[in-house]
Length: 322
Image (cartoon, rainbow, N blue to C red):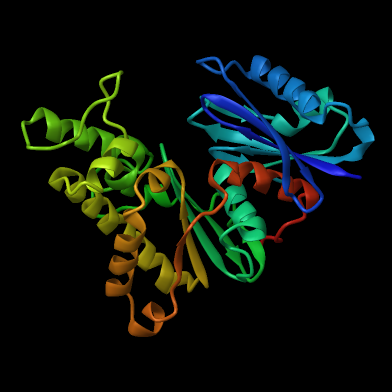
């Protein structure tokens, strides 16, 4: 029996999954990454984890290995051009891993691969055109168009968190999630937590309670929203409004058959999805509104791992750039 390996290279942890040839997860390993992530140390740890996930299988039972990584990726060349979460630039990840391992390696952007995973195994199954949006520390999107993963003319498609909600005088290369006017500043996890902290510290009546580190998490926002907390409800309504506007623009441009919302913020705050759905329907033409389907991701934290295995199975032969 043949298998595939999917690996997710995150800013704080490394995950590996062994799947069957249908890309169903057989087993999974997770370990932390040192901060800051040293390139050589992480490469060695990734190779070692790949061997551990294989366990007693013969090495030729593995067809290929896929790696999901955040940031801008040159997928055909296997290079991480820029990964803010890792602090890496121009790392030849594919070549370095192939020096350490006996298998072919394919790499891709983590949100693209999460969307690919949901399309193959999760909430996107059966859709020919799909927009996946994942909201966590950042906000990214993946696109399936006419049954193929679309990565754009330069491989950078999907950086939806950098969409502008208002005209702004900030320089074009400004990408911080704190910049007012960007979707990141309105709906990413750190932005929601900062807004919750500000509301709590200003003396607003709220049930929000900081955790042991003194931070108000998105899980806490979701918890007290379900109890009727006015501050949490306002934060979620504002975030849903920003997300809904950006998604509405994407809908009229791309007309996706299905929209998937996932990521840690969506898992923590289930109330986001119905509110986003209302905003989208309010801001698109009736013909679009009647046909749009917005659903929660199904694969949870395994979406990118499974998508990396799908990439490996497809041997990197995705859509040709048009």
